[in-house]
Image 1 (cartoon, rainbow, N blue to C red):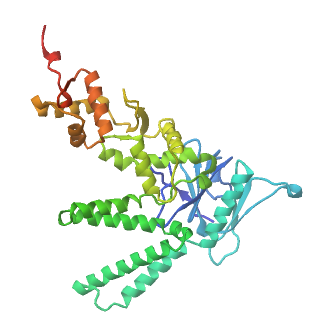
Image 2: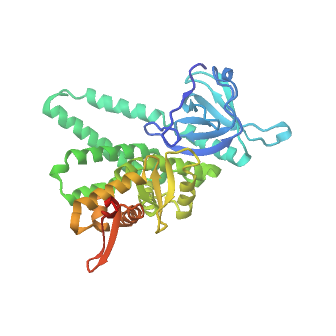
Image 3: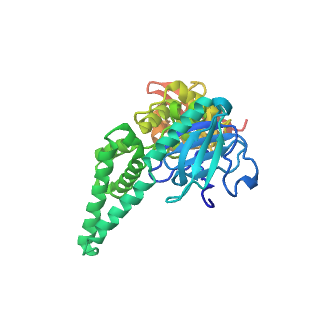
Amino acid sequence: MEGVWDWAGLTAGGRPMLGEREAELCWAEAAGGPEGLPGLDEQGNLGPGSAIATTLRLVFLPANGGPPVALPLRHCRRAFREDGFLGRKRAELVLEMGREGRGVEGTVRLHLAALKPCDQLLAALQRALRGRAWDRPAAEAAAAAHARGRSVAGAGVSGLMRREQLQAREADRDLEAAFEDLGALMAKAQAMVALAERLRRSQQAEGAATSAGEQAQAQELLLTMGIASPVTKGAAGALYHQQLARQLADFLEGPLRANKGTLALQDVYCLYNRARGTELVSPEDLLKAAQLLEGLGLPLRLGTLQPSGALVIQSAEHSDDAVCAKVLQVAAEAASHGVGRTEVAAALDVSLTLAQSYLEMSERNGLLCRDEGPEGLRFFENFFEHIAV
């Protein structure tokens, strides 16, 4: 059974990278790494960690930070729980390995931390083995190749039109299959995200030719299709908040970059839940996950804006000094007119709440002075600190 396992890739948030049409099914804490994989046992015991069942693989993430192991389920014939003497229940999974057309060529054992997670992981593995998701892409690719082979004219304008029609039919089939039921929606999640990504690229390419309303409508659609395998309590179990924090870090990479490294927690709640679709997360769970970000070594942290006390999520590269410098630049450009939170929000592309907090932070740092007059609260560049007395 050489070559039945491989090292798995991780996202920036420390979660397994999913392949095309792959979805997470279950997370469970393991007392030890998989035993019985040729070439792996010689490297020593992997120790405790997390076992993740997907539609295509069994992934093991060592708790000591070592590289994760991935076992493709296409090499697995059967999965079951092995009990002890006189039927005494044990949290140990056994996977019988063997390639197509051969008998059992070996076994892989995985020791789980408790019985309930063991049964949940076993049910997920058995469901994946019955579904055989690894066979579907090959069958669809063969059908597409057969359709292309029947085409006499594959080049030129007619060939381009046929390929566009083929892609449109494939997208229609994905949409029809995805919305038949929730099970099919999970199986088609990766295809849906890929379709959303194609729509986003198309929108960018045609940005000049589309109206602002059409672009906003397309952006609304893309926000609802942002996460292929949302973390759930049923799948992650005791690891729920930890995995929620890791997925949150992956998801916020783009939004934080677009918002100068800071997002209010209520904005994060709205964006994240829209991307999760039907698997909504509660405010309490989101707050617990945000509190774990820095402790897990992720490049994000939960902060508090003064004096409002508003909670924000900030990237590790975020600097209060850099923000104050940008606010000062906006105020200097306004000269004698001064600036309010509306101008700062527009200039920095942030919410009004963040803009007000940035103005007050710049005032505390001695960069701005406030003026409360008939026009309301305005802030001006502080010239007093440059005056020599």
